[in-house]
Every structure is written in structure tokens, then in C-alpha cells.
Amino acid sequence: MTELERKQDRAPVPSSWDYAPAPEARDLVQVRERYGHFVGGGWLEPKETYATIDPSSEESIAEVGQATKEEVELAVGSARDAFENSWSAISPSERAKYLFRIARILQERSREFAVLESLNGGKPIRESRDVDLPLSAAHFFYYAGWADKLEYAFPNRKPRPIGVAGQIVPWNFPLLMLAWKIAPALATGNTVVLKPAETTPLSALLFADVLRQAELPPGVVNIVTGDGRTGAALVKSPGVDKIAFTGSTEVGKAIQRELAGTGTHLTLELGGKAANIIFDDAALDQAVEGIVNGIYFNQGHVCCAGSRLLVQESIYEPLIGKLKRRLATLRVGDPLDKNTDVGAINSRQQLDKIKQLVASGEEEGAAIYQPPCKLPEKGYWFAPTVFTNVAQSYRIAQEEIFGPVLSVLTFRTPDEAVEKANNTAYGLSAGVWTEKGSRILAMAQRLRAGVIWANTYNRFDPSSPFGGYKESGFGREGGRHGLEPYLEFE
Ligand code: NAI
Ligand code: MG
Image (cartoon, rainbow, N blue to C red; front, side, top):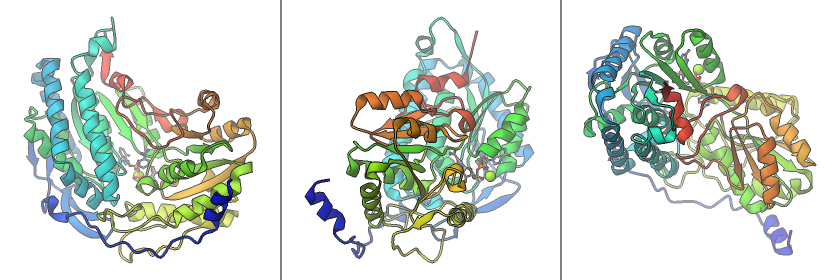
């Protein structure tokens, strides 16, 4: 480190800066009091309903349906009918037009969607505006381009659609996961029944209005809301030809058991416990930004989050010093405020899980650090947290916390880094920070993870396939690879 850097690192942390509130307009989006299920291009009045809330205030936003088995069957029937009688007869270039329209409407209405996504999910508006919405639109644009080029994507293999896809998505990226699932399914000629997560159904229900605007034929996309019971009914439905699931490893395993031997196609995108590896030649200030983005982005509700920081021993002290100083500048609070860096935890259930794992870290002997920060009284909140002095056997080094909690481990040699990084039941993602290109390539070959970032973290692009090894699941989303799970070949 230079003398200047040493001085900077000793300067007091500017924790007392006040920012004037910069709230995004809540009334950009009109939320209805009550929503049904979107089936056959219209709204089906639900038999049962529940209230969906704003996790930053615990206030109810709207009543939504809890779909029963019968309602799920109506949605599957409508998807089957659309597959056989309209969608599969439409030419691929016509299919592409619908996808391009959906992409453009999402762009046009992106401010409205961003507000709703933050309101219902708790994520900072800066992230929904700059990440979730642009990436969702980009995904539809990307797959629109493939719709009429499938025979070039798979030369000499004669691809054809599978049929009705049942798609179950989680609450951390509600609209983006919808886009990851629906765009490739439609591009390849399938029809869809989508189930959003129980805590974040609203952006999917607003998306139904985008489908209406795009004049997508009725029944091509159906949306049923509800909790795990609705998801289980969709998995069990005999009319579904393929299930695509993103969520917990526990539920993923249950779905795989359920479908074993049935011939239903399946892809699973499950949890992760990624290593973000910092070598001693890395640019430390940039690495600190990557570490922060790796674990505090979206409150750490990210399957590919860099939740295990592996630091080369020789730079441990300066790096952790810089990281702690940076943490003190993170602003935690109102998701709709444009200054907010860390928003609300998605649900009470998730907050309880984070608290329980953090308590286990303290009990097992790790040292906890949290910057001084005042959390709002109502709603679900958790301060950005760093654990040092972590042993590989601790629960916080093994289990997915899915919150703003980082566990720091150290290593001496590249071999040790690889061994520790791969010492997990998961294998979704990893990060490598070093000046050496050859080391990046060598590490990427040896890390058992589906996605590896070098000198960056949590970067996404629709053309780049995403998915896991081991208990992180199987199948890829994004890229040409992402078409394959929705196709059969003659
Ligand atoms: P979950 O796996 O229960 O929920 C994900 C989706 O699956 C939701 O739409 C849910 O309604 C549905 N679901 C639940 N039970 C089902 C069943 N038996 N059959 C079919 N669908 C079902 O995840 P949960 O409980 O919300 O979170 C628990 C933990 O899972 C988190 O703390 C986190 O560690 C992990 N998780 C990982 C995600 C990822 O992106 N890989 C996303 C969400 C959670
Ligand atoms: Mg669950």
C-alpha cells in the first residue's frame, strides 16, 4: 500500500452524513384491491385469497388468489388448448413478434414495474430500476431473436416444442425470474402456467396486462398465484410436460422425487454458497466494491451471492479494513428511496432464518461486525454483517443464509483456495480477483461452479448461460443453452 492509501484507511468513517430523502413516486403504479388468476387471457375469480404485503412496512397492498388444485387444472387446460390450437400453428417469426412487443412494452412501463417490484419485494428502487427491469426486457429481446432460428441453433437436429411448461419462481427477482422462464418457453413454441412466489405475486399480475397489450393469444401464458400448495399442484398436474423451478434445494429435491419416472421434463435452479476469492495481487478497492455487490446486492437474497469471502492471507488486514469502512457508508432503509443501498428483508420467515443462522455463527465462535446503522421500526430489516474468524465447519460457512451476511475465510495458495471454494454441497457461482489472466483461466477450470466471474461479480447477460452443479441444480437458463430445456429433438 502507498503512504496515501495508508492515510486514507486511518481517516474516520463518514457515518454521520445525512442524505435528503429522494423517494420515487409511489403512485406511478395503480395496484388493484384484489386480483384473480390470469387464465385463458382473462381473470378467474379465486376461491381463496390472502393479503400480500409491503415488507418494509408490513402493510397489506392487495388481496391475491391462493389457487386450488381445480384452479391450477383450469390454467393447465387453457395452456394445453392454446398449445394445440393456436400457438404451435403460428410461424416462428410471428412468435418472435410477440416477444419483441413484450420486451418493448416492458421497457416503456419499466418505471411502473420498478416501483411495484420494490413495493412488494423490499428491494431498493435503484436495483429494480437499473437491474431487474432492463435485464427482464433484455431477456425477451434476446429470445425473440432465437424464435425463428432454432434450426440454426441446433443444426441437423429438428427441434420441436415440448408442450405445456409449468414454471415456479421465487421472490428474490420476481419479474426477472419470470422473464428467464417465459421468454425461452415462448420462443421455442411452448405454452406456460407460471406460479410466482407467495410473497411477491404483484409484478407477475401486472405482467398479465403486458400480455394483453401485446395481444398474445389467450391461454399461451397463464398465471396462478398461491404458496407451495399451488406449486405442488402444478408439479403433480398430469397435463404439464415440463417443470422449470427456481427456489430452495429442499423443494427442488421434493419436486425431483415427485417427477421421478413420470417422463415430465425438469430443470432446477437451486441454492448456492459461492466463494468470492481475492488474491494478493488484486486491485483491492475494486475488489471491495465487488465484495459489497456480491453479498449486499438485493439484501443478499441472491442464489449466486458471493457469501463466502476467501482472502489471501497476506492482504487480509488491509482488505478487511477497507471492507468495514465501505460497509459503514451503505444506506439501509426505504426501498423506494433512490439513495437506498440495502432494502427490506423479503419476509418475516426469511428474517427469522437469517437471525437464526447469524446466532449460530456467534455461538460457534465467529467474530461479528455490523456498521452502526439505524433500522426502521416497522418492517423486516437486517444490518449488513461480516463474520471473520470463520471455520469451514461452521453453519455460516456451509449453509445458504440468503441475507446480507458475509463469512470470511483465508487461504495461502491457489490450491488451498480451490479446495476451500469447492468444499460445498453447492456449485452455482464463484468470483476470482487477480491481475493475472492465466490465473483466472486456471482457477475457472478448477472451480466446480456454473458461473465464474473474474474481477467483477453478479453480472448478468441474457446471452450467457446460468445454472449449477451438484445441489445447485441442473439445466441452464440464458444463452443458446437456455433453449434446450424447452425442446425435444426428432
Ligand atoms: P421455496 O423453495 O419454498 O420457494 C420457491 C418457490 O417454490 C415459491 O414459488 C414457492 O411457493 C414454491 N414452492 C414451495 N414449496 C413447493 C412445493 N412443495 N412444490 C412446488 N413449489 C413449491 O423457498 P423459500 O421457502 O421461499 O425460501 C427458503 C430458502 O430457499 C431461502 O432462505 C433460500 O436459502 C432458498 N431460496 C433460494 C432461491 C434461489 O434463487 N435459488 C430462491 C428462493 C429461496
Ligand atoms: Mg419454502
